[in-house]
Amino acid sequence: MSSLPQIPCPAHTQAESMLSRHFGRETVNYFSSSPLNRLSFLRTEHPFLSAALKHPSTRFVILNNLAPLTRSPSELYYARYDEIKKYVPENFFDKSEEDMIKDYDSRVTLPHLIFLGLDESRKGDGLTWKIYSGAPYFALDVTPKGSEEQQANAKDVISTMEAKGMTFYQTRVVMTFSADEAAIYAQARALADWNNRNSFCGTCGHTTLPVNAGTKRTCPPTDAARIAQGLPAERPACTTRTTISNLSFPRTDPTIIVAVISSDAKRVLLGRSKRFPPNWYSTLAGFIEPAESVEDAVRREVWEEAGVTLSRVVIHSSQPWPYPANLMIGAIAQVSDPVHEEICLQHDPELEDARWFNVEEVEEALRIGTSPLGEKAGPEYKEGGLRLPPPTAIANQLIRAAISTEFLTGEKHSKM
Ligand SMILES: [Zn+2]
Image (cartoon, rainbow, N blue to C red; front, side, top):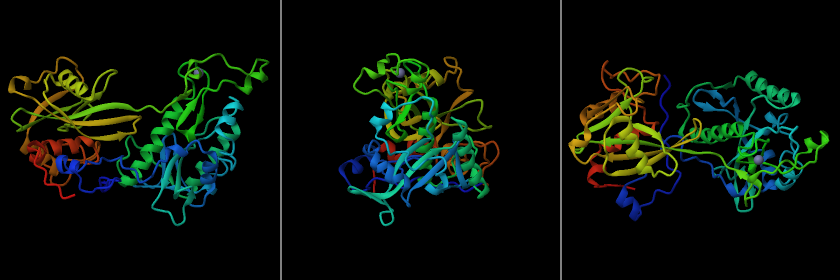
């Protein structure tokens, strides 16, 4: 088993403030707190993108069927432009977005190249653009697709990288990268996956074009391919074009995840699904539905899955989860009185079991019984004891916070 990565160092300034004195320091979860400055407003500036593409400091995170190119299971490989040149021509960003839309031809498929941001810690050898400087980072999807030539070029990049000893790391969930690399990979994976799933317009069903350096897609009003078929270039009307912004945006699905404490604060409610290994429990979780607040979703999910009725819900922290596009919104909640603590699994049969665990048992499990799913618990773990998710999972952080007296009494001794 590889050693577990650390939790991210906050990318934000951790200075003492009235808010930090009152609420304590922020919990920063794995996959968040990217070291890159996204500079989202530069994604439409093609002269910037064009310079960034070819700059010697620029690095590319490469994905093949969403598997990241790695040196080892714990280290991403960052390619240079020379290594992907065959797949991404130098003039890739030379046309303005306006011209790309105007000249749209659905017979031509473009590689999915996504601008991730600038690593501002590398100002010295980095690219300077207006007041910003750093090493530009892109994500590139080399999954072979499109024309035969494009597929051949993608396969060429893949085989060249593999010949160098690099591997496209196949795993259900990556939990082995350093915190910084995990955050970069999460952004790359989420956007590559979203682009793949949205090559057709959700409104009119015609093909879409990636714009804003791979972070939005548009349904162009004309298509040169139609002229070749003896049709007018104009495509059928699409309501996405009649609004101010004819763009479709990457999807993020909000999900709640909650550590529930009993009315006396001496027990924690945890549940398990059938796919978990024996003795493994976690916090309850579920999707937020349309027109539902985070707090309402927490109360609904806990009642549906465990029959428990909650009182106060407090939002604790959040975790991007790029499988495929979730944002886990972590909460801590409490039951107001013992009457509402009774567990009932009859409403929604999602959980195999839900149970109240004593704080002492949970504390011990946090100490000796955590591991990623599919891996063994630590050497001190005793067979039959409670097992819990690792610190890289927000579930672990929520359970930890829920049983800390600091969180319950509100007495913060923050040394920020
Ligand atoms: Zn459309």
